[in-house]
Image (cartoon, rainbow, N blue to C red; front, top):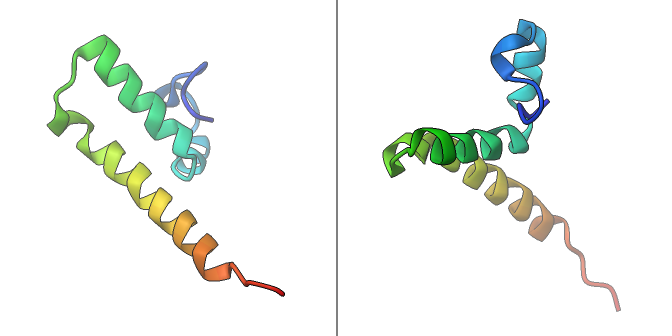
Length: 70
């Protein structure tokens, strides 16, 4: 559930909680803010920070799990 086809506000609470772990949700939120509301940088800073945090966690875990073999 990213909120692209169905608005997150119109789904049950369990689905809202489940969508918090989906990074596409935050991307769609930023796109909607910029396109529909002409949002400023301060408006999109929270979802952008969450996407950045996900990127550091995923990339950091990839680097740590990499093992060079000969």
